[in-house]
Image (tube, rainbow, N blue to C red):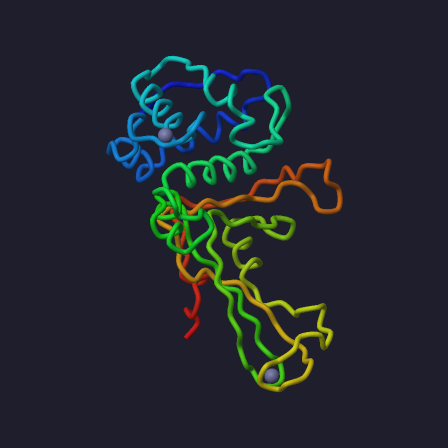
Length: 246
Ligand SMILES: [Zn+2]
Ligand SMILES: [Zn+2]
């Protein structure tokens, strides 16, 4: 079903594009419509991003062919991210990160710290958008590996050397020399400093994968990389998942 269009309130296109994406993210909308979070059960003091999105999605999907003004979000931008101002051009990725973080906190039962493993397990935001990234460091002389796992809500990919999404993911998960190939890494097995290689892989893929293409050049922050990055309707994550090479 196609819902309403959104009015640009002066530099708020970044907000509108994120709202539109979330409005059509099916598992997320199913949760909002399930009635598990309601304004009467909401414990948030002041602005609740989850309640606001619930209202927005309900209105948007009932207003096919009409134009809505996302006033609730624009008025409360500061509650979503302290650094946002409504008249300023902001970054869609930063808004998305802050909005998800804000909803993550709103949907947790009281007394659970938002950065704890049980919070990641219980939070609807992490259950829908959350994955786990493995960062593995391998000693070049004895092949001893050490791994670190980190939860993620999106993957930020460099696009400088990638014309397609698959290539950007290949670059992201490619093995690279740590410290530029210097013997800086302390191997627990060799018990000395060695040359080591590091590789990221997706340890657990999320139900809904959010990908952020880094369009701001690291060498020239004011300049946007406007090139096209091609992708297909389906994306096979298997080559980028941990231990899939065997
Ligand atoms: Zn709420
Ligand atoms: Zn070693």
